Image (cartoon, rainbow, N blue to C red; front, side, top):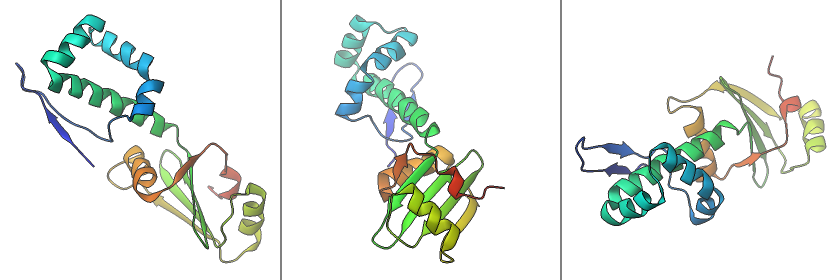
Length: 163
């Protein structure tokens, strides 16, 4: 979902959020980073408080920009995603240029079992496609936010033949 924020100022700034605003839990996690972000913008605690009170649209704009920055950087670090359905496990390897999709006709999260299935099950499907025009990070965001994929820390590279 995209939200456009307009601020009436000398330059009539307009900003369209790319991802979403950080939630309350994320705000707590990135609190110190937000202070640094504001500092880089030349905004100290006193000015921030004043901005929130007198120019709430500008404050929202700054928070939206910070939210986009945090989410985008997080998405840059996502390499593997997984979705387990009733009769299928799908693993995505999102490298810099390609989307590698592995569909295994069984619901399992066990890496060793997945490797066994990939090596021995003729129904396993491997696909390699380019990213849609929205780009890598927005595509990953859509998978996570709208389709229930889970970013994984495990390295599933050995399941893919990326040669």
